[in-house]
Length: 210
Image (tube, rainbow, N blue to C red; front, side):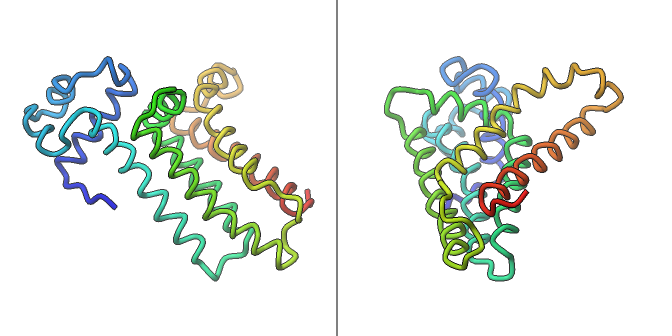
């Protein structure tokens, strides 16, 4: 796990925003240095190159998720469905609060060229699948979850639904029913709507209860 200092985190934050706004190739190290109020030599010292800086953005965001899922799996006080609900809320909050990162991640997943960042994405997804699977299989063995659950499709449903709502939120925002909500209130409304939808869906799939 990487342990970044405050200056590195500041550079990573600026790089993440610029990569999302201008694209990786449209952003220069000079752009990042100017926005972060550091010199180019400092970026080179800390990260080595722009490619390595992009990797650092991904490692920083992914490490927190890895720690959370590990702690969730090892928690013996929560029921299996509670763990699934906690996972849902965690990733709703994460993805809605890290929209610049989600924008970069979407681009990199579609990148047909081999890259360390794309490898990191698939490594994390593979890890999360490996961690989520025992939550389901242990509950199946205990007779709590149904035996016909497709864990891979559950994960695809979780991330795909949240991912698609990010661009769709701008369309939803134009609905006059939400005109009285400020941006923070609308974000909270969207979070709760997503959470309720996914929890009902996952409960139905996992337990066949509605």
